[in-house]
Length: 230
Length: 263
Ligand SMILES: Nc1ncnc2c1ncn2[C@@H]1O[C@H](COP(=O)(O)OP(=O)(O)O)[C@@H](O)[C@H]1O
Ligand SMILES: [Mg+2]
Image 1 (cartoon, helix red, strand yellow):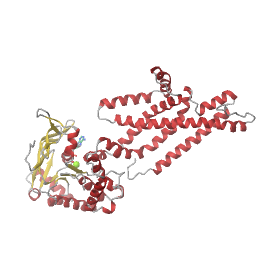
Image 2 (tube, chains in turn blue, red; image 1 turned 90 degrees about the vertical axis):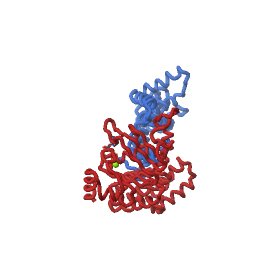
Image 3 (cartoon, rainbow over the protein chains, first blue to last red; image 1 turned 30 degrees about the vertical axis):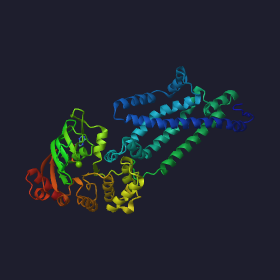
Image 4 (spheres, helix red, strand yellow; image 1 turned 135 degrees about the vertical axis):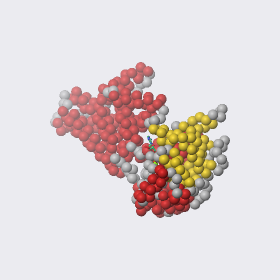
């Protein structure tokens, strides 16, 4: 029994149908962790990208160092840091938030690169026209450069969403009951691993296909309006 | 404050511009009078664009002083009267005096034509939306694009896009208009409509115009003065009828001969 739901081991089929609701609860946690982590990565990555693009070295340099660090160390180390080290400084987060934050932090380093490439691909003439019209730096970034960068970065961001979903199982090491962790617990208790693990694989396949499809749809629907996309 | 005569609106005083060690503008002295229409001609790489870009504050100078409308452009007066490099707020104030039209138009592709014209007036001048829209529509009428106000730039021809570019710069009510080869990126059949708009502007006598172009006939018709740039200096200048018909310098003659043969 898990989450108050019993399983039925009388046959493979009965077992599978009885654990499906349990796995779906785990799937919901997986989706939440991926979405929250992705959201953090999108926001924080944009902050990094803006800082890295700053003309002042004292602003751009720390951002470069931090994102390099986030990108070049394993997610697991960052996860352990947040989970075991932060409490020593009096910051205790629920396991789920710790996990989502770790995912968001690491992926913010990746998304900041996507933003950077997207932003740099906007023609220099756009910056010059904005400056000639006396638009402020912030206004130029948010209303001239960023809207032209977005259509270029959607496909790459979509890949990271799928990839973040596939990294969620790592959160099981800090006790988050995401889908794979749930499947493992079922296996431990019933000595039947093959059914829950296969089901998790299948559900993952469906989830990633849906996510990629949604991204492609968004990409098609996005107004491009003559923005040159290489 | 005025280091220049009241009728002088632009003055380059021994201005130097280097890219690394490469000197593009070499101790340039150059003046433009209020309301004057000046055409800059010269071979590619002679620093014509750089002069306009320095004025539009897109390119900082390496030496000398630039005056615009009685104030220093790239400098500010310090407490003791010494010149120090201009702050961003000083540059913002100075930039309001000028508008620029680019060879590649540089319209904002994700905004409608009208929005291209209202973005800066509302954001920079704090103009109410309704007023900015009305002004945009007046300008679009002036450049003959009323029917295209709600289109996006890529739906327009090059000539139409450049006319939007001109209207967009005018929307900020500049005293000085800078045109950097406004027709060089256009198919030949579209050049005329853009020159037509510039010609009408040239008839406004308050507006100071600085135009870089290879359209020699047009330059002859609209300019008060033509300057021949060579290697970052004004090699020769004068009234168009003098400079075009009777150039004194050998290099000017060569250049004019080459360009006129091209056309
Ligand atoms: N950002 C830059 N870095 C290095 N060299 C430059 C840069 N911009 C212009 N130049 C050089 O300065 C010279 C003058 O350029 P420009 O003012 O564009 O000439 P023109 O408009 O007369 O063709 C050219 O030789 C060009 O290569
Ligand atoms: Mg040029």
